[in-house]
Image (cartoon, rainbow, N blue to C red; front, side, top):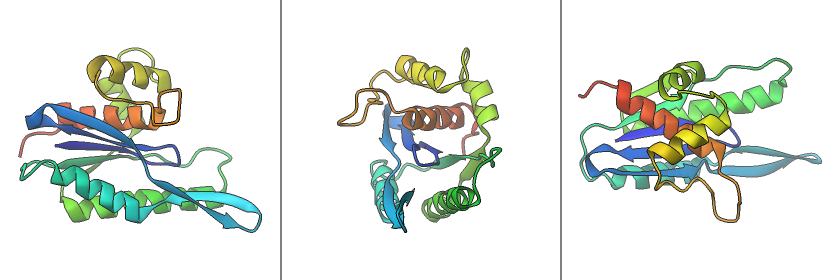
Length: 168
């Protein structure tokens, strides 16, 4: 089983159940909170733990479970608070994932995009790749009309793990 995670407020989680031929993608669970008169967002760790547990339970004893989290860095002009929150999310994703499996990889966007995407390395390229390679994955969350690029990126990261991780 290969689990790809695109961290961030518009992130996603995707899974490829290799031996079963199934795959799926989900929106990363985010919760809102208020600081003064501003609304902020952060990872809902409780929902993430439940989501990851449910994904892993579906494999029923599958031996190889690999989790890959996109490793991104600060961008110019990004605020201190947003970078702190992003670091918190990244650390929680890796830490909780490590509790379920000892096989955690971090992969840079450049690395997985160069390996997986042939044409455009933008969000549209990731969505196009997933729609062609995993046509049964629904990238459009309920109540939305356009595909969720965080789910597409997560699916691409899971695919990257599938083609680069050596078997146990």
